[in-house]
Image (cartoon, rainbow, N blue to C red; front, side, top):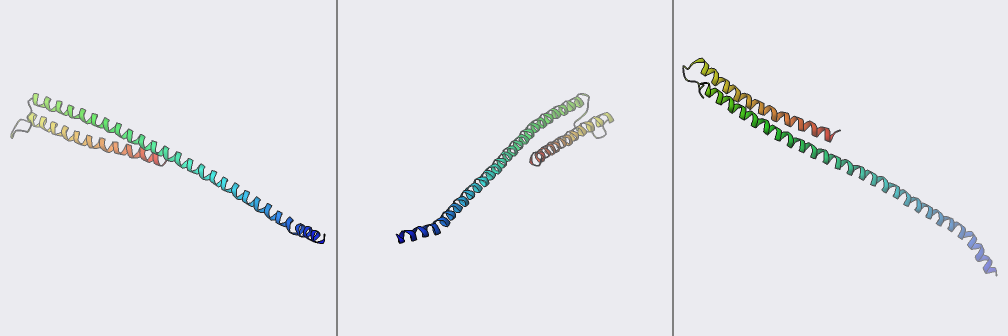
Length: 149
């Protein structure tokens, strides 16, 4: 009986602190699991936000590319229209009696018509370049607005 009493005393003396330690470890482990779950939720939310931002940026860049293509097509149409207008002007100059090249010692009207045709050609070239620069500028501005709102 004495051995049983000694065993019971030993159990009370060591088992209760052992149970407390086990309970503390279980609580710590539960806290770690909860903390890890909270961190995982934060990471998942951040990844979802980054993905949404990436998708939006991709859509914005695609929109800019589409707008550039539309602008480029309009530029080609304007250039074609300008070329046709220049051809009509040259045809009108020829019908009016002008020459493709001024005749040496030719009359002033023929020289003026030739100069007018040359000026129109140069104006068409400059306008085409300006339209191209405008398209680039508009596209770059749209890209910057899409990338850095």
